[in-house]
Image 1 (cartoon, helix red, strand yellow):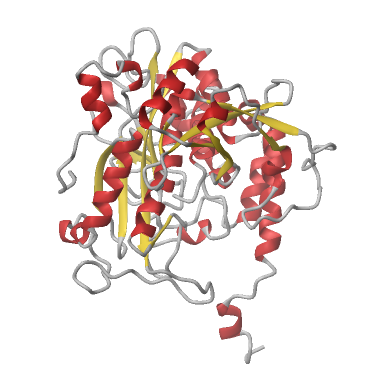
Image 2 (cartoon, one colour):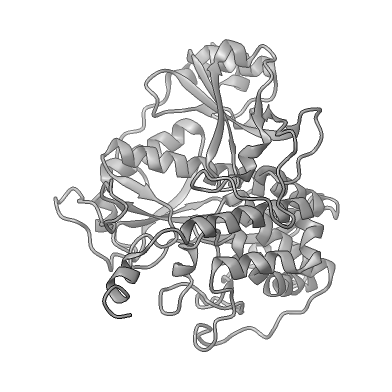
Length: 479
C-alpha cells in the first residue's frame, strides 16, 4: 500500500544524478569497500555509528562510536557471555551441555558493509551497520544467530543451490502500558476510538494509523528497506508487512531492522508496537510466515520444479524434512512460554505438521503458483522468533529431508486443525525435542543446540517465579 505522503527525493540522490556524488555511495544501503564507507559517511555528515548484531533473542546488541573511529581500523569486541543470558537478562546455571566460556573471552564484531544505512529516527546524523561475530583470533563462532543461518546457506551452496525466502511479519499496535500486571489494549486511531477486531484486510483499519504508517514507509525508504505489501490483520490494530523474496541472510537482516523500525515509528506516535506471539487474550496471535524455495545458482532454475513443470522429488523431500524435523526445532520458531499460547486450537494458527495445496489450516502450505514460483510456506513461526534462527531451522529441516530423501504424508485436503495436536505444547518439551535428534547437530551444530537449550531452560525457570492472574483467580480461595 503506497504512502499517502509525497515522497521527497533525498538531496544526496539528486546530487548523485548530477554527478556530484559517485553512484557507489549514493545508494541508501550498503557499500563495498572501506573507502566507499568513509565517503558514504562523509557525504551524509554522519557523526555516530551503531555497530549492532542480533543476540539469541534477536535483540540488537553492540557499540556506538564516532564515524572517524569506525573507519580507522578500530577493533570492536563483545563478551562471549552476551550469548548466554536470557531475555530477562539473567545468566542460567551451567547444566548438561550449557557451559560458560571459562575466561569469558572477547568476541570480535566484523562490520558487514553491505548493511550500512542511516538511522532515520535519530536527531543527530547517525548510521548503523550489522556485524558478524568471530572469535578473538578470527575463528568461526558457530552459535551466534547470523552464523547459524550462514552455515545453513553454505550447505545449500555446497550443492550448487541457493535458498530463497520471503517472510511475512505480523505485529500489534497497543496503547502504552507501563504496568505489566495490566492487560494490553488497542490504541486509539485517528477517529479517537480504539480499533476493534474483525478488520482483516480493511483499508479503513489501516487508515486509522495513516501517519504512523507513513513514518514506517519513510524510515524504511531511508534505510533502503523495501516493503512489498502492508495489510490489516484480524486482530484489533494488528498489521502485517510482507517482504519481497530474496537471500535468507539479507531477508533476516531486513526483519531484524524492520522490527526496530516499526517500534521506533510507533514510539514517535506515543504507542507501542509488539511482536509478542500472543499479546492479548482472546485475540489471534502474530506469526512470521516464511515462504521458501530453492534455485540452482548457475541456471536460476527452481529446484522444486521439473523441466516439464511438475513438482520435483526435491520438493517432496523438502516437505518430508519439514514434517519430520520442524516439530523438533519448534523452539527456534516459538522461543518463549508466550509463543505456545498462539499455537492453540481455534486461534487461526496451525497445531499440526500437515501439508496441503493452498490450505491455510496446515503447517506447511503450498500456495497456488506457476512452476517457476513453486514454494512452500511455513506457517508455524511466531513473530517473536529471532528471524535468523527461524529461517535457519526451517531451511535446515527442509535440507535434511532432501539429504535423507524423506517422503511426506499425503497432502491434507480438508481442515488439518481438528483432532490431536502434533506439536510440543510448551517450552520445556520443545527444548527437549531440539536436543533429541543427532541429525539436527549436522545442520545447526551441537554447540549452538547446547547453548540455546540452556538459555531457554533458564528463561522457563524465570517464568516459573511469577504468579499469574489465573492462579490468583482460581486457586486463591478454592484450593
